[in-house]
Amino acid sequence: GQQVMQIPQYQHVQEGEDFTTYCNSSTTLSNIQWYKQRPGGHPVFLIQLVKSGEVKKQKRLTFQFGEAKKNSSLHITATQTTDVGTYFCAGQSNTGKLIFGQGTTLQVKP
Amino acid sequence: DAEITQSPRHKITETGRQVTLACHQTWNHNNMFWYRQDLGHGLRLIHYSYGVHDTNKGEVSDGYSVSRSNTEDLPLTLESAASSQTSVYFCATRTSGSPTDTQYFGPGTRLTVL
Image (cartoon, rainbow over all chains, first blue to last red):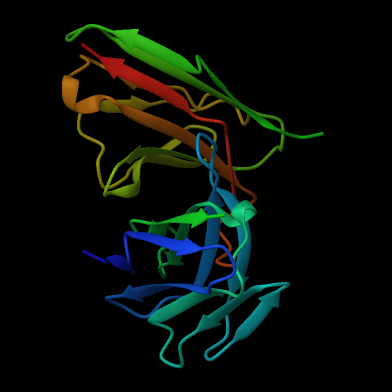
C-alpha cells in the first residue's frame, strides 16, 4: 500500500544548530502537510504544501515540496529549545486520506 | 471556541474487556478519524467517517469498531481488548474531503491493556 517514510527517526542537536527532516512517498501526493507534536501533547497542524516545487517559510522553519510531489522536507534554522518535539509529515493520497510518516523526534540541548 | 474532546484521557483495562473511547467535536466537521500512535509507527488510521451513518476501515481496523449517529460524536469501541492495543489514541476532524483541508486533533486517550 501507499507509504510515507520519514527520516531520521531521532535527532539531537545543540541549540543554535540547524535541523532537517525528510519525507518520501511511494506515490505522487495531492498535497503534504506537516504537524508538530510537543512531548505529551497532540499533533498540531503547521503548514500545507500543494504545488510542485513549492517552498514556504514560517520564521525559522522552511518547508519544501518536491518537483515530483513525492518528497518533502522541513528545515529549522538555529534551533531553540522551544522547537523540541516530534515532527510529522502527512501525505494526502488521491482517496483523500492522510498517510503519516513515522515522525522525527527533535531534542535540543541548551 | 470549537474544540475536540476525548474521554477518558487515561484508561487501564484488562484483556478481553470491551472498552469505548469517546470523541466529541464542536467544529461541526463532517469528517472524523481515529488514529493510534505507537513508537516507531507514527500515526496509523483505525477508522474514519465522512458523515452521519458513514464508517470506513483504516489500515489497522481489526479489533475496533465505530458508529456515527450524529455529526458531533465518533466513539471507538475495542470489542475484546488485547495487550497489543495498548497505545495512545487520537481522534481528529476535518472540514470535508477536500485535499486542501487540514486535520485537527483531540488531546488523546492513553489506553493500557493488562
